[in-house]
Length: 206
Image (tube, rainbow, N blue to C red; front, top):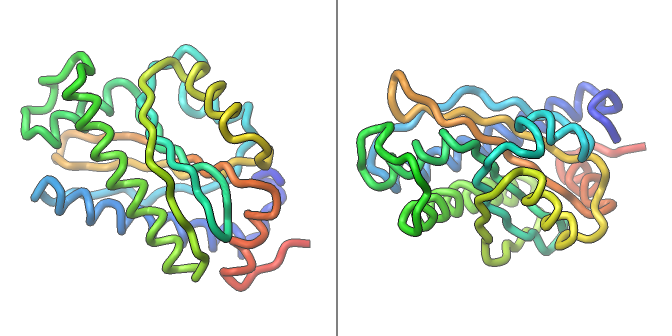
């Protein structure tokens, strides 16, 4: 199932999921840091496992990744990846530091990134669950800070059998007028989970 095989209705449904999920996540982030956070309307589409590497920036791109295993009606794994500069901005945001202060992700920085990522992913999944009526349980989140190739390799081993197509949601947050935090949600679903998701939205796949 590639991006080109999606119908217009399915693309609309994915966009709606993205808007509601990210809107919920941004609201939770704003409450966490006690500051307004704006976002650009997220883009949603499906890509192959190989194509997501290009989207992020290559196998050697340094990324921070928060991963959550999904259990329940639509099993899979959800990832939220940030590039190096964006995760530094996230840390500054949570710790109340001027943007550009953090330049190395130490233990405190990793803890802060983990907390923000957990809030964002948890809120996103909660919104999808409420929207679709699907029972979605999240396991304990994991954090990794490494080259993209190493992160994806370990996650593929942990995920086991998943669809070759990955739901990609591009996100861009604006905690400051002249600053932005770019990230990507990736939803790796087990076979038949995508079908259940579409069915829950009143769509059926042939």
